Image 1 (cartoon, rainbow, N blue to C red):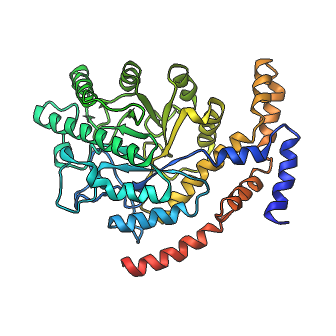
Image 2 (image 1 turned 90 degrees about the vertical axis):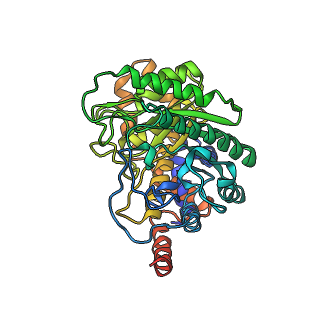
Image 3 (image 1 turned 30 degrees about the vertical axis):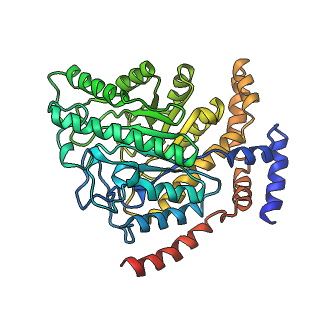
Length: 415
């Protein structure tokens, strides 16, 4: 049977439970995922040869890492050519491109990201942005919560500069930019005073936002974390801090599913957040015992997150991925993670969600369990392969042959 014939058979199976697969594929095509640039070069950026800090580590030394902006853009192009649909690109401030001399982070300007804007415009991509509060001499102790006022002012200026750059992206590309703030500040051992660092962080955020920005163009998000390497006992930017700060200031609260206690799940938080806010931002990753940023798999939590996105409306969720694995081919990491997120969304959209919700409301839990279990064996894979064919990308594992060929070419060039 051809891919189309398999799809037609699957289409009939889903139609019998009230799911229109043609409609699902059209909807899936328009759900953008923000692909993170930092998978391609192990979070190094283009500022120099400094080591990673702020509790961030990459492991492995797989050959072929991008070393220049041109190589990174080339690799992103290759990854996107193997991922169906139209997506977005997520940048960190440390990926500034300096053509007329280095500029420190507190004086970054839109001109340092002009090449990225041109890259995105040529490909019809939106851009998202992140101030980089790590891997810098002035981030060794603390950033926005620092006791040193000069250090704190430096990082406030950085946040303000990033707001202006985010507005520039939105204006250039005609689509809002999500600017996400995450800081690594915290303490290795039990703190004497938990409130004072958070008060300084609150003041710093207030000062960043005080310069004013166009809320139609920039969605500011704040991202929490439960702990980091070297900050095991206390992180200043906790979930409760940012959830309250976002609510009070009408910002987005960003949920990263690697940033909570091992038994917490972000999928259970999404519906609660959306009862009190029109939108929520997500970083989907895969923690293994801790926030270790493994490549996103089609695992239970990824599928549950996708179900919540679909049930609550994809238009209310700003969806991005965040992982970095240097032990495997980096382009494959991007492609596997992005395609798995799309597969999870597809599986969620192929459920008769209205019928399942009615069963829950009628408390018919036996039939609900039966239906949810039987759906696991429905032919979602045949629908996925047809989606890939419609979008001009290889289905199944066929895409990997292209990556291996590309890898051979790039290794000859990059050594």
